[in-house]
Image 1 (cartoon, one colour):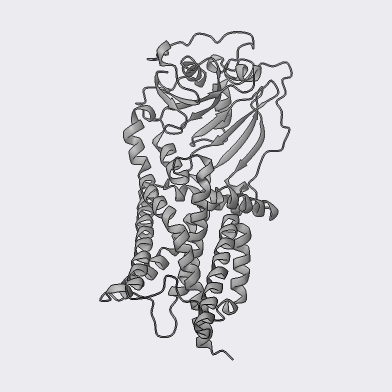
Image 2: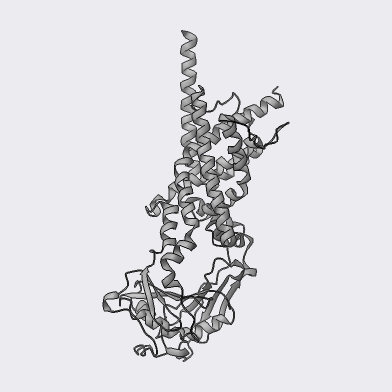
Length: 471
């Protein structure tokens, strides 16, 4: 019968072996993700320097009606683009963002380009007829000329007080979008996101096994000895800092996996199965004309503001005569102000409303976790993420330092796996492993490859021992 000590030793050898495989698979991409993540941490400061002239304005009196600002943006947009949405800031010193995208809906898109549908571009809350051209914009200036047409899929920035077009750029050309794509797909498109997901999956395994390996047992305190040198010193600090950052690592990895492709699909399916899907408006909501003219942008904004004051709003106009306005808060830094509205295009009546109190526990968690992952809660959030990124770099570098030192001391390439190690895995470990295999498909697929390699290695070692025995 195995003694408790031998059981722990066998279990430790198994977790150490898994920990090494996790580091081997995750490290290359994790190093890149850590470096790009450290760059992403400083996005607010970099964006303020690069795009401050587009984002910031000087408040002068009262803002112009939103209809005038929309038409100012339309004046510099190509005729084949439709108005996708408008972002109206809550802060007085921020510009209005008018987002355009290539027309995909034929006549519907042409109507949307006039301000939503049926000529929503009426000035000062008075809609125009669907067959009438937009009225001239009074008291509005623009520096754009015919040669300054914005590119496809673009954002036009408008000063809400003067109506001046401050500039434009491609919808994906802001530094925040560039750094996000660098961090999530290495600028290679969605087809490469699997690499980040694979690395994040094995980093989660590395974290969980690392915590078990570090956990103090017997007389050990788990605290590093400042006088320790060599491989022992690396090992102590590697384990200690990994555990200190464990809670944050778990938050970063899980929130990252929620928007990944394969693991994200599994997580969302599980979320929906347990009734934790975020609230969504009923299908089939429509506006009722009843002989009325549709309300214009400014009128719809005022209708929304009565229920969503003090928050940046993204306003998406209807696509046809029976369509509805969809208005949502777009300020990620204030999740408690989260709101989604569906409004009737002719009366401004609220057809659907969901606020923070209507969110599920899961959607509340992601509403807080995802902005935290992106460092959007201010300097303290950025500081924590910087320390986390630096800690990840240290963990990866120190892990490989221990590997090199072990090899120099004559150690094996892989940590030794004691006989009966697999049988030492507790029931909780089997259950957790099964859950992780289902939740992270790329982990399951790559884990199968690792298992094949382990079987091949065991067969080779057994054959070598038999040859030696016969010799």
